[in-house]
Amino acid sequence: MKTEVKEWMLVFLIFIFFAGSANAQTAMINVQARKTTSLNGKWTVIIDPIGVGEGKQVWQEKKSQKKTDFVEYSFEGGPELQVPGDFNSQLCELTYFEGTVWYKKQFNYSVKADKRLFLHFGAVNYLADVYLNGEKLGSHEGGFTPFQFEITGKVKDGSNTIVVKVDNKRLGNGLPGTGYDWFNYGGITRDVDLIETNETFVEDYFIQLKKGSLNTVSGWVKLNGNKLKQDIVVKIPEQNLEYRTKTDKEGWAKLEFNSAFKLWSPEKPKLYKVMVESETDTVADEIGFRSVEVQGNKVLLNNKEIFLKAVNIHEENPSKAARAYTAEDAGMLLNAAKELGCNLVRLVHYPHNENMVKQAERMGIMVWDELPVYQHIQFSDSLVPQKLETMLNEMVRRDKNRCGVAIWCLSNETYPGTPNRNEALIELTQKCRALDSTRLIVHVINTHGYNNNTFKVWDPLYNYSELIAINEYVGWYKPWQGKPSETKWDVVCPDKPVFISEFGGEAKYGSNEGPGDEAAYWTEEYQQQIYVNQIEMFGSTPNLCGVCPWLLFDYRSLKRMNQVYQNGYNRKGLLSEHGEKKRAWYIVHEYYKRK
Ligand code: GCB
Image (cartoon, rainbow, N blue to C red; front, side):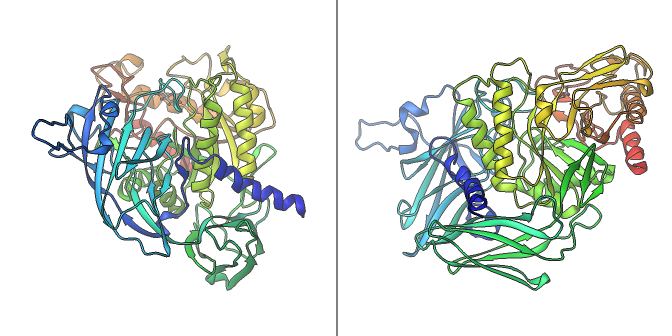
C-alpha cells in the first residue's frame, strides 16, 4: 500500500516539478469548467523583425515626459491581431514571418480578497515572455501546450496591461528543431483566459479506468491552496455514485472505486458527467471509461480486437490557410475523418488544441496525441532533455482524462544514429509510463530498409514502442520492387502489432493531363494507384493492426516548391485544401468500409 501511494503522488510531483521552462507554471486542467474571463479578441501589436524591442523594453510602454523626449516605439496606432489566431494569416507582411511580434491587451479586473487569479494561455508558438503592468511574469517555451501564471496580488483593481513577446523563430535545440514539413504558424494561437478560483481549489485530477479493468477507476485528486486537508467527493450522478475520501496535508487524495459503466467506444461514445468536489471547490467534467491495450500482436479496445482505421491530420484549416483552433475548425476536420470511415485520428506532429481532442471523443473517434519530436532533434544538446520532459508533462497533464486519447506518441522519424537519441527517448518512454500507465506509448520510425521487395523493420526504439509504427512511402519516395501482395517483412519485434502510420503520395486535385503512370505529373490516377497497391500489400502484412494514410487534407509547407503542382502545399491529401475528394479518397473509403 505504501509504495502504491508513493507512485501516484510521484506522478503529480513530476507534473509540478517540470512546470514549463523558465517560470511559467504548468496549467490547471479543464479550464472550460472554471470561472473564466476571456481575453480573446483584438490585441494591438508591434512587429519586431530585427529584435530591437528587447533593448527598448517595449513592455514598459514608456511615454515622453518632457518636450525634448521621444520614445521610439508605440503600441498606440499599431495594427491589431485577432487572438487566438496565428499572425501569419492575418497580415500580408507577416505571411512568411518567423520572428518577434509584441502583443498588448488592456483589461479591467477587480479581485475579491478571498480569490486567486491566474492568467492562462492555451498555447503560444513558440517562445513567450509575459509581462503584467510592466513586470515580467515569466517565460514559456513550446508552441502547442498550455501554461499559466498566478497574478493574485499583482493584478491591480481597475485597468491592467498584458504584453507578450511572441517569437516563432526556429531553434536548433527547439522541439521541433529547424527542419519540418509543415507551416510554422506563429502567434498566440489558442485562447487566453483569466481564471478566478477560491483560495484553495481543485488543481488537477486523474479519473480513468485502471489498466486492464473495465469497471475499476483508479486515480487521484490534488488541491492547491492553504487548506489542503479536505473532504473530497467524486460524484457520477448517472451511476448513483458518490465516492468519498480525504486529502492529506499535501492536498492529495487517492481514488479507487468500481461501477458498472457503459463503456466508451467508437460505436457508442458514452461520456458521464463527473463532479470532483472539495469543501472549497467543484469542477465538473465529462469523462468516458474504456480500456485500450496490446495483447500479443493485437490491439484491444474494451477487451475486443479493433482494427485502427486512421488518418493523419495537421492542425490547419486548409481552406483558410491558417492554424485551426475553433470548435468549428475541429468539426470540419473531424467530420471529414468520420466520412472517410475512421475510428482514429493521428493528430500530427504536436499536441493539437483541446477542441479537437474533446470533439473527437464526443464523435467516437480515438485520438493519437503526439509530441513535436520530429526528425532532426538535437538530443545531445544539454537543454533538450528538460524540454522533452516539460512538453511530455504538459501534454499528458492536459489530456489524461480524455478516454478518447488512446495513444501517446513520443517521437516521429528520429534516427538511431543521432547522438543521445536512444537514451533520451527511452528515458522519455519511462517517464510517460510513470505519468500514465493506461494508454499505448508509441514511437514512429522510418529507418527500415526496403530492398528485394522486403521491408527490414528495425530500430532499438521499437523495443519501447507498443506498436511497430512504420512510415513507408512505397510507390512515391521509392518504387515498388515486386508485386505488393508478395512484399516480405523482416521485423525486429515480430510479435508486436504493426501499424502503418504513414503512406501515400502526392496528387493535385483535378490533375489528369499527364500520363497517369508518371509521378512527375501529380495526377490523381498516380496517387490512386499507390493506394490500390498499398491495400493489396496490407492484405499480407503480418500482425497488421491498422493503417493511417498521409493525410486527410493538402496542407501548407514551405518545403513544397513545385510551382505547377504544389504551390507551397504538400499535396498528399486525400482531399484538396478546399475539401474536394481525390480519387484515392474513394479507395480508402471503400477499404475502411470493408474492414
Ligand atoms: C514523413 C513525415 C511527414 C511528412 C511526410 C511527407 O515521413 O512524417 O511529416 O510530411 O513524410 O509528405 O513526405
